[in-house]
Length: 329
Ligand code: TXA
Ligand code: MG
Image (cartoon, rainbow, N blue to C red; front, top):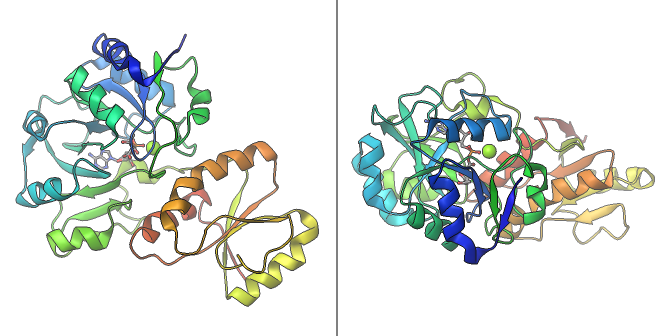
């Protein structure tokens, strides 16, 4: 049985966690599936509920910078600068872990991922529990991360409680930065952009996917995969419009910015409002899930510029497509 808790029931949620239970809670990025970091059985329940491979490590969530010293062996100077500027907020830092931090959380690695969320419910919960919470995104492994209360349906019966918090604000997961590498390595782009990180740290390397398998175990697995296949369209605006017209009769669902003005028929749905990346991010996983329920044959997405927050959005789009491209020539 999964208890459904409202935001005025944070104390109940905290009690369940302290007793080794699992609780889904909102963060500013996506919903997380939490367990206290010092309870082996509770941690195992998290992997089980998600169907997550044991070698894919979890992120630890804290509410107070002083908790960093409980967890991290060496805090590099760059980390303090980043925490000052971006915490609480959507930035996860990977540092060397203390030996007594369970290797269940780190998936057997000697490093640990850490973040301080800015969502008020999350912060209040973390404060009430007063023990760091290990929390991956609260989806079944491989599914898009949950950004709405309705997305938590698939976790019913798999967790002890769900603490409701409405739609999440950012809509895609935190930026993950490995500070044990020199220069630091951006493993997962997010709302905190490469450009912002470089303002603070100088040079930051970007993880290039395939080949560097050990960097972040999570990157090895197919992610954000909706049931409906996603294909990324590449080509000029003219080619894309031509493509839509040819496909009108097949009820193609198009998620695109470029064709905003030209798109008048119902088979073409407008998703990226021009210049509003925040909206695009907030809506992308929601869109994938809602399309799954409508049984479209295919979802086409067009590319956007990989600068600033665009890098993170394109990352999720590419991954949800399983790197399926269609070049229009
Ligand atoms: O926004 C977020 O980060 C959300 C909310 C709930 O905080 N959490 C989240 O967790 O997205 P998860 O588990 O879905 O993604 C964590 C990513 C995975 O790709 C994992 O492999 C990577 O971070 N990761 C965790 N610890 C790591 C480590 N020690 N070294 C390298 N990668 C690590
Ligand atoms: Mg995840």
